[in-house]
Figure (cartoon, rainbow, N blue to C red):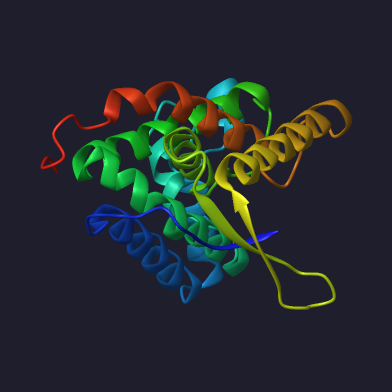
Length: 228
């Protein structure tokens, strides 16, 4: 099922959401047109490589082993066009309502905190991984968790791609996002048990972000609707 849009009303302009999308797209486009060697070097520098923090792997591409900025910077890097578009599409659909309920500054802090916790959990469950973990998926999972609890009965309009027919259905957010969580859990445990954690998708980051968002979102909701 591919989400098209949701039906929850939004009463303010999601400036932070738009800004995050713009930054992610800009970073990807700039890196896409860089020489391959330079682009790869930046991915190595600012993507989170778990083994770097597990075994004291010093000096990777000039980055000291105790440099933890990658737990934040990886949230703005993406590996392919599909990776970028999928993440930004989910952010576009669901984040505006969450930002509306939290206010801009609170939402930004919430987003970055969920993403960092998600990255940490991915490291915790896959500490020997030698390839960079990149992408906004963990932070977006935190946003999805907040949406799950704030708008459980909102309708998500989804396209069911059966033989490319225009089959569009309305699904309650609690059902759509619930299935999403079960899918992440299935793939995370499968990767851990049968692939020694060497999965191409950071499933544990997705789950970590959702868990973080579920626990943190009540503390970021604004009490005064006029706050930003």
